[in-house]
Length: 407
Image (cartoon, rainbow, N blue to C red; front, side, top):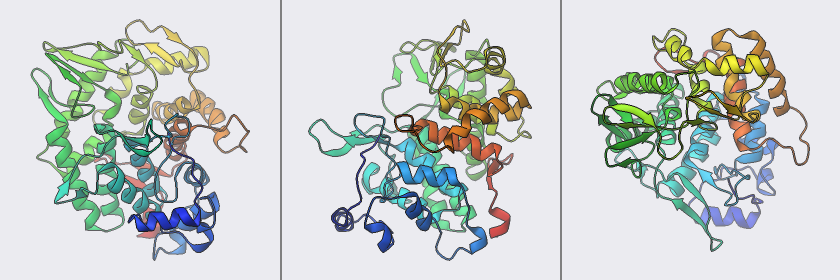
């Protein structure tokens, strides 16, 4: 998604003049942001040595996809785009890695470039979802609409950062952003209840409202409900579960669905196909605390993917939710998403298959076969969880492996 830029001294100077905080050591300023530089920068100020987290996969991700100023770049796209999703996921991984320095750079870049510096508790706006190279060769916002899943993740990241790093500034911003999401991106649908739109613009036409189940992870909704009990979050969890159960009649979730005349219908734009969005529904279900009252029903509603992988040895790249017809073979990112799902289901055979595939993330890179952005991020979610680097409790709070040692 992003521009592959070398971090020259001139570039650093330009960033400083524009107000971007780079936070680099002198050794890292001289060249591109390497994994070694990323590791050096990942130590939070004042953190005890015992609190430093050795997470090679995270360091590889930062070294490859996170620019020195905190911009996450997806090199697989023509516009070398940055998305609010990418920023939000990277902030989450920085929390899991106890890497406050990188977290702050990611937040600063998001504030400056996606939120036009309107990103404080008294004046918070939803960040633009897409930034990158424009047709004229300049760089900037490509689409000012926001993406509610990224907004939700950023709010969650901030709330958890405030709790884990004992900093109320993060908490205040997280609360303000969550309130903005509830105001601008959550609607009440007659016959269903609260539902989070994919973005504030473009998803309601006449009597049809389009929605995306992968935008609403259960642990995040639980955390928001705990932090803001007067908000729509608990009821939104129930509405989301109802959507997944209804639109996955054979245990396969579609990327998109719609609500019309008091019922769920096939999405008018993308039909019933489940692929690169829907794969995250299985991931979020696998990450949910097993003590959450919706965890088991949620997993049961999407059991088709487990059966299909057991039968053919790999996940389909695309599968029709209403017929179960699958095509293609899912890439590495799918195995990252499915690993927690298999673990939650107690499916050791398929979890073993996932581990075998995910070993490619730690192998020496082969030119032309380097894992792309989506492989890396879903791979980090998956391997981080099954390796015990983090979990969510029944209130949706993040429990990173470093928590006890650092407290």
